[in-house]
Image 1 (cartoon, helix red, strand yellow):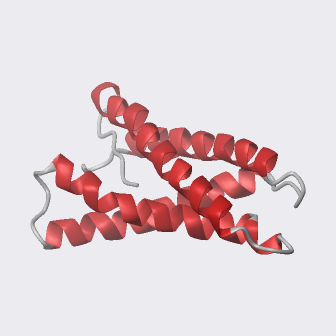
Image 2 (cartoon, helix red, strand yellow; image 1 turned 90 degrees about the vertical axis):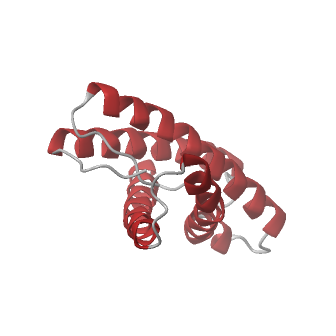
Length: 138
């Protein structure tokens, strides 16, 4: 759920997310080693920027619809959005390079990435307690 971020809170969020998505890139490089590796900073940066842009649009739309007080509904609505974010990012960096795209592999990794994004919300949420103006988006 969105909060007004301070500069320190925003930086903390971006660093946690970037590092987490970079680690996801390590795992994807292992899973797609026959296709070739991707620079972790590129993957992490692309996924972080996509998450920020889509997350801010999602937060704005939730505020518009008045859905700001239900954390369960918030996260339920994020499930398909995060899945699509991961699907697009993994396809762009990995699966499109495959001779024969494997949609089951792509879907499995996208689902795992969605779970990873949810896990990354934990340290981001904890940063709200420690860092004034901490935030999390998507």
